[in-house]
Length: 255
Length: 250
Image (cartoon, rainbow over all chains, first blue to last red; front, side, top):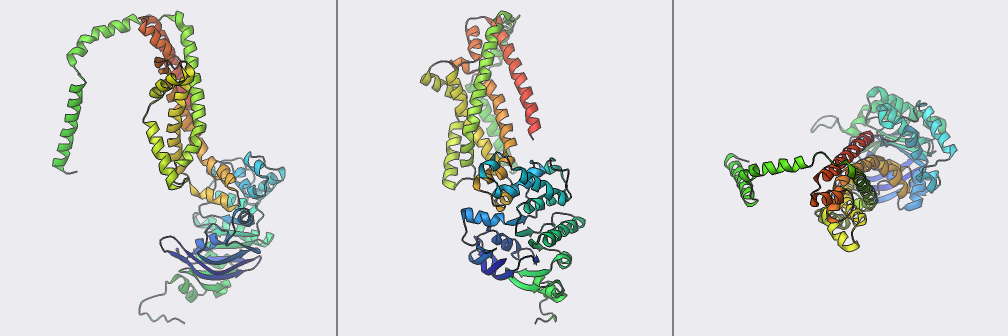
C-alpha cells in the first residue's frame, strides 16, 4: 500500500527532517508513528501525500509514485489519501456540512464544486459520515460554534467522504483534552476495522500508541529506530526512541 | 529615550507647531473680529428654504449613485491587485511593484482625480464616478491585501490535501476566510465615498455638491442650508445602515 525508500528531507537552512527512511506499510494496517518533537513525524506524513517534497528518495502510495507527481496526477493521489490535522484546519465560518463536502471536491465536476452545487449523492455521503461521527443534526451549525472534540470529528468526516484508501493523521488529539483523545483514536480504529482503510497516525503519548497501534514505528532524528508490534515497545525501546535513558557516563548500557 | 533627548524632542515639536501657526497667520484677534460675521452667516441660513428640496434630493440621489457605482467597480478591480500586493500570494517582484504603485496612487485624493477626469471627459457625474473608482480601488486593494496576508494557512493546506485544484483551493480554502472582511471593508469605503462624492460637485463632477456650491455662490443661504440638511440626513442614514450590516458580517 505504501512504500518508502531512502527518503530524505532537508529544509532550506539545512535542518534535516528525514534521513534515509525506509518503510513498507500494507493495506489495512494501523500504524502509530511515535518520536520526540522534531523527529520528522510531520515531514514523513506530508511526504506521503506530496504536501512536502522530499530532497531524495521515493514514495509510492497505492501503486502510484508520489515523488515527482504533479498537477492532476498528484491531486488524484491526494484524493485517495485523507489527512487529519492537529489543529483540525476547518473553515471556521462555514457550516459543518460545507466543511465535510470539501472532502468531495476532487470527485465533483469542477464547475459544480465552485458554485457550489454538489450532487445529492455527495450530500448523502456527507450526512452519513457526520452521523457516523456522532454529529448528526449539527450539519447546518457554523463550525466555530462546535467544541474542539466535535471539530476534530468534522475533520475526520471530511477525510472519510474522500472514500480514501489511506488516512494520515498528524497528532490528531494533541489539541484536545485527554478524555477526548480516546474518542478520536476509537473513531480512527473503527474506520480502520470497518472500512479496511489503512491508518497512519503520529502520536506523542506512548499509552495511546500502545493501546491503539497495531504496529509502532519509532522515529528519532529523522531515522526509523523502532518498528514492531505494540508488545515490542518495551521501556528500553522507548528510551531508544525518546532518548530519556541517555545519561552521560551512566551504566544503562546499549546493545 | 533618555531625559535630555526627550526634552529636545518636545521643544522641537513645539517649535514646529508655532512656526506653522505663524506661517498660516493664525490670529486670535482676527478670529474674534470674524465671529459676528460667522454668526450672521449662520443666521442667514435660517430658516432653510424648503422649496429647493427637490433639487437637493436629486443631487443626493446622484451622489449616492456615484458612490454605489464607484465603490462597486473599485471593489472588483481591487481584487486582483490585492493578491498581487500580498506578500504571501505574489512573487517578490510583483509584490514590491504593486505596493509601490498602490502607495503612489493612494497619495492623491478623490477630489484631485475628479479635477483630472473633468478635464478629460467633461462635466457631470461620470468623471466623479471615475475619480471614486481610481482612489477607492487603490485603498481597497491595500486593505484587501492586508486581509490576505493575515489568512490562516491551515484550511488552505487541508483543502489542498483533499486533492483540490488551485481554483477549488481559492474558492473553498481562501475566499471563505476573506469574504466577510472584504465585504466589511467595502461597506466602510462606501460610507466614506458618500462624503467624498458629496463634494465632487464643487469641481463639476456631479452630485449634491453642485447645489451646495451654486447656492453659496449665489448668496442663497437658506437654499444652501436646506441642501446641507439633506446631505447630513443621507450620510447619517447610510452610516447607520452600513454599520448595522458590517456588525453582522464579523
